Image (cartoon, rainbow, N blue to C red):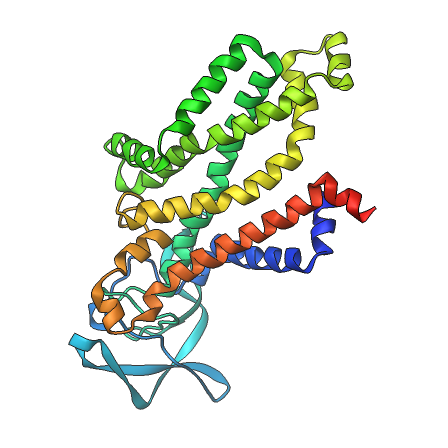
Length: 350
């Protein structure tokens, strides 16, 4: 089925564009430690609010323009005429663990200290925005996938069991679902975060956010899956499996799951943006990822100073652009997948 979906997506220009954009984003996320010239915590107070550095070609080799700070209060930098620094590729830098496992220190590009390269400028403490964007993507892009896996698993188990067994099991499961849905999500997010935060260190806040978003998000999926399971309950292949003596959970995973896979895939694709936005909102409000961690939402929260707007420090708002592009891409891809699996669309084609 997955191969068939990819073939169908490849026939649609919008699908190809979405897969290309997401592929680039996730490749950058996977190799962010190698692509980023600095660690997200590396500071240089002498280069606060440094604008994006200009890249020049000198003797067929890329060089970085050297700047001089002429007005610290206005974050004003002027290029030093004739002063450039060559860019080194695949050179040693700060040590890191690739994927948290492999020790390494090779960076894609760097410049010789004490000079620095700021492809997308720096923040108020001289940290490289480009490096922080790459490291922040590890949280902002992975939290959707991990959260949706937990959500869809819980939704399938609860909704499938409720629809298959019915009776008291169905009644108890649906009352729990309705209770969770009835509670305003924002207040529930804040309450759960406040209740769980004291048991975790700031470095473990990522796990807290995943738990919170998963506990909130599974209820809606469970209710829809329960309705689909009720319709599958009386299908001939399910009745035949019962006559053959197959266990209830074998029927759920062998017969129900393949018939619900299309919905689960489309629902997951459309739900991932909600997780990204929820994490960004929590971090923006100061309730999500905390320093020394980084995420796109935390970067936006740190860029809400009046100085950013008065001095036109536009590069500090790039995390918002990254969130916008990612959310739009996932939504468009979800619409493409929905058109592919929608039986009415298939009948129109025939």
